[in-house]
Length: 548
Image (cartoon, rainbow, N blue to C red):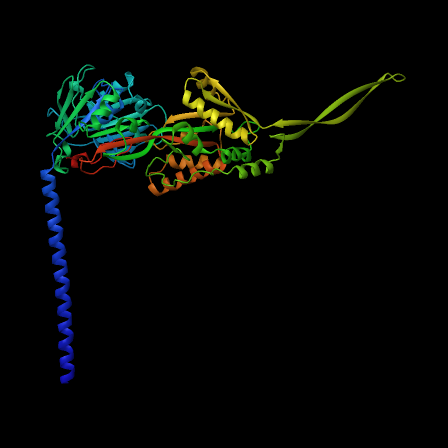
């Protein structure tokens, strides 16, 4: 009994020591965490709460009219859209809190309550209707967003109905244009905004922006950055030099020669795929290209790295699929057949092509029928005889590649493709067409292969690639069913799966060959602190945390 008593005492003692140790460790961790938070808060308080930006070749701060990409980027701090896009291009509420697709062509939009313009007047549905009307009558970068809108009905101050002339997949993504104040608008002036910052001064040398005290998001988001000075420069070179000497804190650009101006050290850098996507559209109804094996042979025989290195000095990204720029809806980055010229030769051999005299060719036999009529003298009757013959013809693997003549870079890319494929025995004729002729040939599908470039929209729709009348004359029953399902679901997992399946058809059926995308770069001074997660839609995610 006495032995058991001491045993229990010992166990209780050990447990007590363990509990104390755990308590001690947790207490120290909490103290350490509190000290770190206090230190971060102190650093934040001590941080300079203003930054300097730059604009080259400034035109106007009116977001409806401006053609300057840097201006448009900065304007996102002043003007807000109905629906915003996150850093991975997912929709999120902004001035609109709810949106519902009532039919194929009608949307009901519910606006955020208690939103005010920078002058304190209330934001209403009338401002949205006014903005859409201005975009439709103006040559604006945002006109494309509303080109299908035929009517905007104001239901009440916070509700409106938008009617389209046709079904537009993912139309909500197109509602990311800036809304302007209807009661304070003119082409010459700067209309009011609802965003985080407001312009307090605009002179020949600079624009001064202060945080907007009327911003609706202030109750949930603390704007530690209080002032932004935007310096104006006559040329990009002047702005780059100003960044180099520390007078500008951040630059966003697709300029591939940026390092020639600012060097390689002394700043932080974030690079990403830009909007400009270049690809080959293959006419799948062409007598030669209707064979998927021929299309695969071409894909296997193209070295995209060679194009990017020789034409762009490695200042572009090789690309395998239109949606691989970082969108949430498509995360797989392996949409390519890969460079494998030997496999390309194998595909042609299996398709009946023979490599002879450094060229691929195929013999085809065509059956013909000759009808002969013979007269018989005694009976004055005629006899009809039929003879069957076969004619053998030789077809060479020769294709035309359409390119826009006015784009010297694209012509160089076309010549590179011609040289690569001809090394493997595939004859390519580069057809340089004028702008109007090029557009007409694309519209009428009058080409074997076309070298195309398009600005990819945040809207993930692939109608131009897989929809009716697509660039490649491509049709597939299963793809058509996938495209229908995409139009009729909001389930994120279903959408991700559908776009993954589309990428597999893109890779396996080869109606297109993605080549490369341009490079978009954000550079910022080492002294600039805060959260940075830019994309080509906006450089200012997390701007409220910035400072120096």
